[in-house]
Amino acid sequence: MRIIIVGFGNLGRGICRAFIGKADFFKKAYGLIPKVVAVADECGAAVDENGLDLPRLLKTAESHGTVAKYPGGRRGKLALDLIEEVSADLVFELTPTNIKTGEPGLTHIKRAMQSGKHVITSNKGPLVVAFKELDSMARKQGVEFRYSASVGGAVPVIGLAKKLLCGNEILEIRGVLNGTTNYILSRMSAEGVPQEMIIQEAQELGLAEKDPTLDIDGIDTACKITILANSVLGIDAKLSDVKVTGIRRVTPDATRLAQEAGQTIKLVGTARRDLLEVSPKLVPQGHPLAVSGTLNAVTFKLDLAGEISITGFGAGPKETSSSLLGDLIDVHRTLGG
Ligand SMILES: NC(=O)c1ccc[n+]([C@@H]2O[C@H](COP(=O)([O-])OP(=O)(O)OC[C@H]3O[C@@H](n4cnc5c(N)ncnc54)[C@H](OP(=O)(O)O)[C@@H]3O)[C@@H](O)[C@H]2O)c1
Image (cartoon, rainbow, N blue to C red):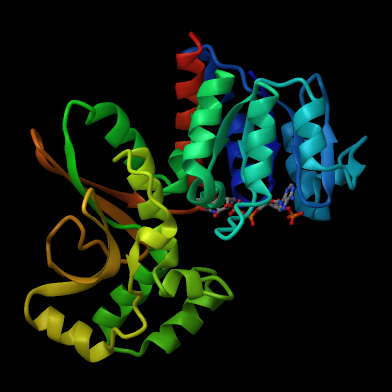
């Protein structure tokens, strides 16, 4: 399968490492031979119609900070042109999330679909801004569109819901879907220290963004709830439909009192037909949603199966490549591979 990767940061590099390390496995288990023919970052692109040398590409990106320095690479070459010009089956869209405009990912995805290419993305921006439009564009163009990594990182929330639980009516989805806030709340609860101190330490450890507002104020979780509402519950929901309260008002005292009562405070996103919400909630200790550290967890309430919960790593290049590759193999199988 001929592949273009747009965005060569943590995830773009993570998936290339997986392509290198698991090439034999993909071939033997699925008859899948991924060939990366073009890669773009913000500075430029590297193209080889015969397949890029992935170890060399990774080395170039790591030492020069851009793929444009790959032999024959093109500084200033736009991802959009690449998507149109290079012959490929599938585009991985892995650029930064912009929840206001969805760009640059939104246009990348549309252009890929319009040129008959399948799309896999981890980028929440386009999904939050234009889920329905992209979903129907994919159908119209006859291309596959997957976005498992956009919610839950490595945790197969969307795949489980759409594939394995499809005999059920999904009554409710509740999830701890933001690793940064979960790390902060877990440490507040364990150590009784104020939020600001933990945020600063989390930033130093690279566990929180320089500007952690979207996490702390619950917006990141609300984006994931919007995506789940659209993709799993089939609701035409906008981000503004989600009632959002972040964790700023959670104090060390509140976490202590919760603990004394056998509970823990979690930032929980809820998606139901009659409610889209994100807010700090009391969760009984020992409940599947009472995960600590940067873990994510999701509980589905179903008409037949009752409750089913899953947990795992919500971020990280190696972990998230699990979902990106799952999508790739799923597309490969759907196409009859
Ligand atoms: N990291 C995770 O664990 C994780 C998990 C789930 C979902 N996600 C989502 O997945 C996406 C990628 O995450 P990441 O961690 O890999 O991000 P990242 O490390 O910031 O990498 C983003 C890449 O996109 C490139 N880029 C920016 N604007 C571009 C443009 N106009 N054209 C082409 N390339 C462009 C950047 O290029 P430069 O380096 O040249 O600026 C960089 O290579 C984000 O939307 C993120 O929210 C991430």
